[in-house]
Image (cartoon, rainbow, N blue to C red; front, side, top):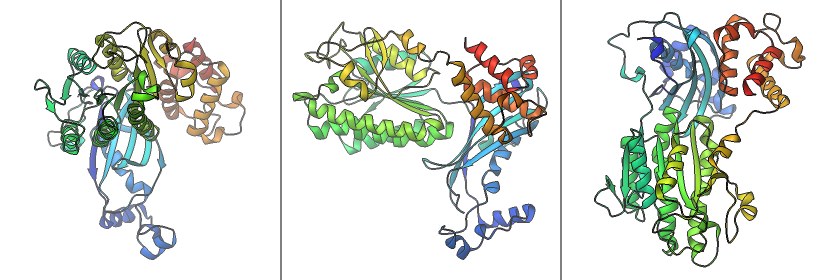
Length: 467
């Protein structure tokens, strides 16, 4: 194994539970005799139904992940931090996940994002910086399968793949080297034939999601706008809900996943034949937004894309759609770029022949009219990630310092220097550099890391890199 073989996105995840016997061993070593961890009556008086695990025992599997997998035998843990969002019970089957979020190649350091989940519920989150003491080493032949480093699966599910947009998305993903699960309601050419208007069809597709574990879902299926409200809700909302619930466990374990819901600007025309269609789409949009709010910090992002006029059966005769019609391949290009792109997703976009535009419900009255929607070219979307003003960068950097170095709280920026601030030493310097690179999207070489030994110097380096 060589350190150069590690890549951002690799992960280790497994499920286990801790017993009261495990705690007794932990207590013998740690001398942690807090009755909260073993006395039922005391735990109940403290507001818990039963004794709970010590945090130190709950996070102990991450030490094993560092020592056996990320990076493995030559590991040296440089720093770690934790947030306990909820308590951990005994005999509770949980998922421990560690993902490579950043690599400092010159120092042979991996920065890991750490999570403990009870199903979809995050119990613990944290970060760990681990250094490999050598460049190359041998992996033991008897290492357990749960400690094997895994790559995020290049598997995508496209619903409605018999339709123009769904078929184009599937073809584009396949040309990019992805394994695509094609769903259709009737077509025999699709891999999965299921009627999403029925509970059996939704369960059939959800089973495929659990089995193949896609990291990208494009929900392009929909009933016709004139279908019954029950059918529209089933295909747009219930199907999306089922697929997302089936996908979340493995997406959370990977700390990576994207779900794209394909809609139409026609749903903004809440009148006449569009009323039921808009209602069903609004349900799915609301649901995805809740998923995004809950799990974006865990690496799972969602978005809804409202498409304007397209050369497809759906757009035929739709007076609410206007402008130059897009080809399905044009729509697929933008959707797939969102699905595979590395920049964060926004919760909602509109898409027309002029390009992709960020969209929020608050903007609806201004951005959608009977004739057209204001649009932005793709480069305008990218421009939203441009550099921030110096004072904004200062505030963000100061927040980071206060979290990594509590002794910095309340002290002037010009007094924050290595070796003069408690806790800031050469080891912490690596952790600071990793955090700066990740939070501000810049790269620091080894020489720069060694020279950036004050708050002001780091701020100047970030500002220069952003200009």
